[in-house]
Image 1 (cartoon, rainbow, N blue to C red):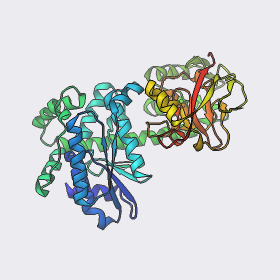
Image 2 (image 1 turned 30 degrees about the vertical axis):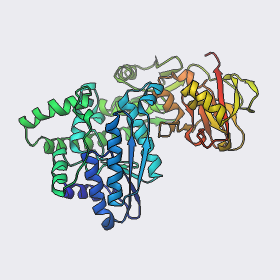
Image 3 (image 1 turned 45 degrees about the horizontal axis):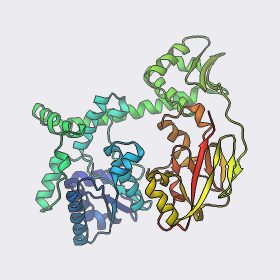
Image 4 (image 1 turned 120 degrees about the vertical axis):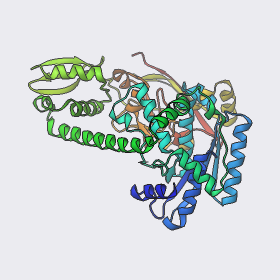
Length: 449
């Protein structure tokens, strides 16, 4: 396992000299093995090492046991540790997420906070990757979904991705390392566990070399996906003209390349391209002219040999409005007021409604004046508890907000950019916390659409 993991680290340039790495340490077998391995490689590859543990508070005493184990382990190995205690069940209820989705969101938010811009190492193995493959397969997916987990993705690295769970167990036994067991891993209530407990053993009986063969297959799939994406980008570039895309150049493309090109083209407007829309676009391309209504706002039209996306409804025309705390306001996008409160007053409001966190701004974190306006190109937000920054159009697309409504949603911004957006709440950089002295609670009623 050690040799495989080191080869993975070097092959993908996971640990640049002088960098910092934070290990996601649950206390389970995989994460303990990863921390031990990186500890051994630390001097050789010249990087600083730390760990982060997130107690989800879901398993009572067992969660407390895991935290105690992790603290003791890092103290023994002299590894800096950051521990977060997050009530994932409450967060899941507030956000309307499953426990699994909420746990993942909270975990990565905490990891990025602990890493402070450095690299995050997670202990995903080839076994996890194979399970993810079958989960995606049962839900219905394309080639990209079948490619599964990647070894390196922006600030995330997975040094154990080419090692199986059995190899990890053997490594722990050889090194005499202890770890904790998560009792929820034994439950068949989760799809992943059912695949792990029932499907994978049968596959290994049928083909003992399954993981090795799976790895080869996955590499082929990834190469194919990369080639198709590159081909789609070339097609998109070649087909671009002043007002859209050349239908003639699109018609000759292979469907696999055409689908990816059109998906990227529509994605530029925050529009999705599923199999039904793609089939309709193919039919449209076969004609000399025509229109396809994507949604109430956007239409794809073919005219004079050019395929283009046009707006069928104009956005609200309005100027930004400077807001003052305590004063009521009326604007074409919304009406309401910003309530200034101190922390004690805010705490009382919080106890009555925990969702107030999404609408509470620390006024000392505001840069300059605060404005009410519609979204503009380049607007992005890092909502509290989400742990990731995305353009507003992507957030609203994920929430299922129709494009015609996105242009009419209110945004609060200071001189740096958005600090609050409808349906998403406050940006992490402006969020109120226990150190806040003056807090602005946003009370907004959106204009009727």
